[in-house]
Length: 323
Ligand SMILES: [Zn+2]
Image (cartoon, rainbow, N blue to C red; front, side, top):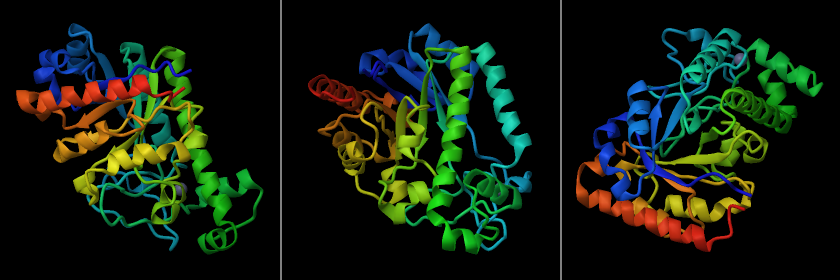
């Protein structure tokens, strides 16, 4: 039985300025980057669910080149201004993530923590993504061989003879980190919701890149993740406003039925994407609006948001899922 509350609200601490308007327009939560003391305080004052976006596998490659994953050509991957994912054999970096998380969990009690960038390397918020296989550093190859019992040594050999095992191994590795972080969170805060921001592509798109490249497998992640949040940024990704609705309606085919799907929409796509999402026959379980401060700045967009919340809540009441 799904006991996750349906949370609605903006993403971004800039929305704190308008937090006294949230309740009037149906928002009951605020998502913000990191463990932001000002945002926590504002949420507490207004009795809103405080939800943290937790950066996992994203780093400044210019100052930490050792974290750049190795591509199939044996060289560091190509990347532009925006990139996520790191070489997952870099233990000092991984230890730092955990130490920071534990430190924060001792000080704060968020209603939810959404794991962000919990993927292999690349960037998917674009129309034509540059998709590269990674990481083929000696340590990551050794980890693959040890985990699978295979004896493949080069990227060519791995992709030529064991591509399915390589994909599965990467997905298991990501799911293992999800479990690790969820366990740490629940050790301190048993009731805390654990969400994950997801590559918004359906499994068949870009030759199965959501698993093949980014290594996000819904079924493997489900034991650790309470709520899946695909990033439905239509304009940035070159998609139409119906993208979120289409994702929701297709999701029962590839997302475990007991796991709610809560979209994050982009304020850039407002309000067409919001209208489409609210009309979905498979309701979003709550809703986040990226850069959502602007929605609450003026009454007109805020009323549009409120109407969408009401429509989604009605659809939830009439829907048997998630169950
Ligand atoms: Zn590596």
